[in-house]
Amino acid sequence: MKVLTKNTDYAIRALLALAAKKGSFLSAKSIATENDIPYQFLRRLLQEMIRHDLIVSKDGVQGGFMMEKDPDEITVTQLIEIFQGKVQVSECMFRKQICGNRARCVLRHEIMRIEQVVQSEFEKVTIGKLLRDLEGAALKP
Amino acid sequence: MKVLTKNTDYAIRALLALAAKKGSFLSAKSIATENDIPYQFLRRLLQEMIRHDLIVSKDGVQGGFMMEKDPDEITVTQLIEIFQGKVQVSECMFRKQICGNRARCVLRHEIMRIEQVVQSEFEKVTIGKLLRDLEGAALKP
DNA sequence: AAAACTGATACTATATTAGTATCAATTAAA
DNA sequence: TTTAATTGATACTAATATAGTATCAGTTTT
Image 1 (tube, helix red, strand yellow):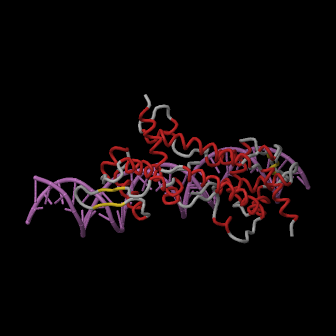
Image 2 (image 1 turned 45 degrees about the horizontal axis):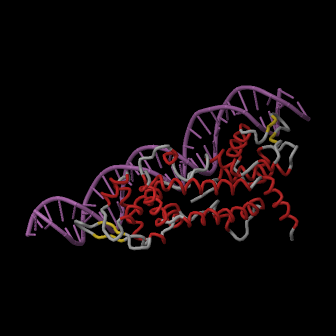
């Protein structure tokens, strides 16, 4: 069971790079090479993040991507939702009002609870927090 | 993001059926029809559960599957591990001693923590507990 | 005008998940 | 003792999700 896919993993790395240089534009190319992310793949992720207003872009030479948002307001939960769909422990059927299968109804209760736990744990992890951890780690020998 | 796949979902339902009739053999066919599980699919799941000693089987007419274990000792975590692989928030690379990418190292810490949380939450959910919930629900109007 | 960029989108490859089919071996019962 | 109901093992197909590549048009700086 894999909780974070490459999409999300790459997106986090890209956002950390952008957060570290907040206010200036970084090109997709530089982010890709410096963070070991396939260039074309990254471009799609960046565009997706623009659509979700996590970052902004500038066209042309000297263009690139920039973070405007507060990095503490970008959570891993959000990124999972964007790139892997809403956290759901099991299928939509569990969410239906009436569910034919009694066993499912019982599971449903536990499932909803765990969904909440998972979601709230990932919500604690923001880009801002990761960046601070990262900078803290850099100082150590 | 889907946490439980059909495998696991079906396995849970099958185990609930077996736990409810603990001590007697139920055929794959009856479990399948009564719980809305594709027959051949279920058979593979049952065999997998035999290999993991969650249940036992008897061949031939009047044969089937039976639960011997204490239902409280079968956790959803175990089932996830069997059918979806060990819970891991991100890829193996995060687990390597030395990881080239500093950003990953930072993520790694959070990831490990969340992994623990997810795992321990699912460990609280046993087949026994689900069965009691189920029986409780059946009594209500 | 050229070069360095993004926007949009189409395409391919691989892996995972879901489901089906088949045949041999075993056992209870007619 | 034959038949029918069953599991064991395994091979196969289909659908979906994930990962990665390629292309071309438009924008902006130099």
